[in-house]
Length: 200
Image 1 (cartoon, rainbow, N blue to C red):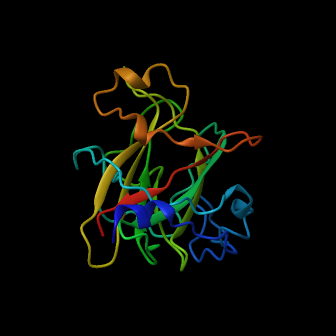
Image 2 (cartoon, rainbow, N blue to C red):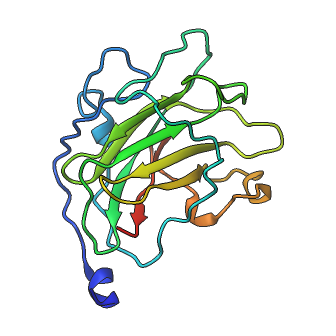
């Protein structure tokens, strides 16, 4: 597809029908039922810059529970949401992609043996994903971040990191890339969006 065509493609705002459920919710209610749909914005126009990858060793562990993750009730928490789209380079929204997320606990420690603050969701028919989790702490000497692995069915997976906006420590992180900074949702505390563009 010509580059001009990709840049001129604008997807309409579609009704949120997420079949995946919120992270860290034992109830297993749908993302829309949990109110995460209010954080979603219209699908962006396609662009030519693929989402940068980081080394697989960035904390990913296979086998994270789909749809829910263990809820550590001992953690002092501040809720946050992350929503967005998974899109292929030809502007196709990718349905059924597995999106794994993991991050540190509030004190900055990441579980390397179990699945505490780890989980996965599937994108819906419009390529949308949505999670609800807590604001992670900062690991020693590093910026706050969320690890992500996006795996479309039958396609190569992308492993990367998402950074928080206005984090002064982020630029010193060895994996920092300004294109990996999440966008804050205007007027909503601790709500962010990020769209993944894959070579798929």
